[in-house]
Structure formats: structure tokens, C-alpha cells
Length: 187
Image (cartoon, rainbow, N blue to C red; front, side):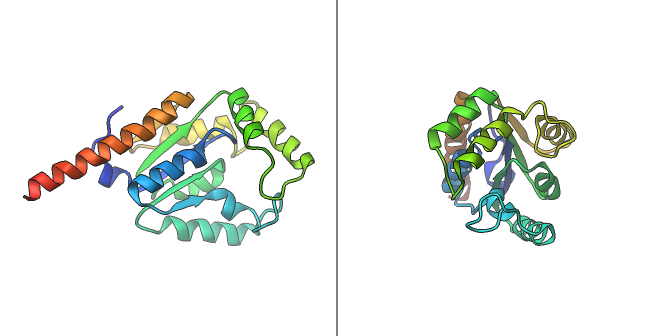
């Protein structure tokens, strides 16, 4: 896995995948490395402090468009419809496609979050388990595959936890090398 010119290609990275795939973990690592703001689509989709209560769609869409207009960002989420809204601004796309069993295990390990109830947590686990079987749904394997296939800029499909970790590590090394190369050119 090599990166052509991280300072350019990584201006606006979109990370998508199933719940529990590691999107937030990867976004945080990359955001820290590149000093880019991180946009969690969950934060834009749900009402603040009201897990399970979606924002008004027009407000949510406006917030997503405003975030996408920034010069640099790392954006992550499961929401295919929102990903589709920002795809034209995205300079690199990462799809984390782990087996549902791994995603469920990750969610169980992190436990209940953000004010969700046990019933909502159980619903989330069921929803994550149905990733590949959901049809005609923006938040599905089918739609993520479609978005990935039409994206014509640099893109990466990460299909194991090791690949996700390796991607974050290689980005760090590649970015440091690019900075060193530019410093030597300007000397």
C-alpha cells in the first residue's frame, strides 16, 4: 500500500463502513497525524444528547454540506446518503469492510454509549448484523460497494483489522517521508 502525495490526496478523506468497523478509531488516528478536523456523521445525523432521535433532515444536510466545504477534513460514518453528498469534495475514500461478527464484537466491547438504552443497544447489534442483507438502503454493504465503485480518485478497501492498523501506520510513515522530501527540495 503506497500513497502518491499525502499532503494533497489526504485533504478530504471520507471513511465509511458498517457500525463497529473502526471508522472512528481510524479517523482519530489520521486526524491527529494530519492535523485535520474530524467530522463524525453520527454527530450531524442525531440530535445532540438524544441517541436514536434523528435531526431534521434539512438541518442535517445543511450541516453536512457546510462541513464538506472546508478545505481539509477527515469524515467518517455509516450513512451512505451523507457520504454521497460529500463524494464530489472527497479526495480519498476509505471503505472498512470487516465481517459483521467482528463489528458486533467491537460494539459489544465498547458497550452502551451516548445515552442509549439496552433495547437501543440490542437494536444496534441487530442492525449491524444485517449490513449485507439490507437491500435498497443507503446504510448497507450494497450501497457502500456502489459508492466505492464509482469513486474515481484514490480509494482503499480495508477488509481486516490488520489492514486498518497497517493503513494508519503507513499513512504516518508516508506523510513523514513526504514532509522530509519537501524540506530537502526547499533547502
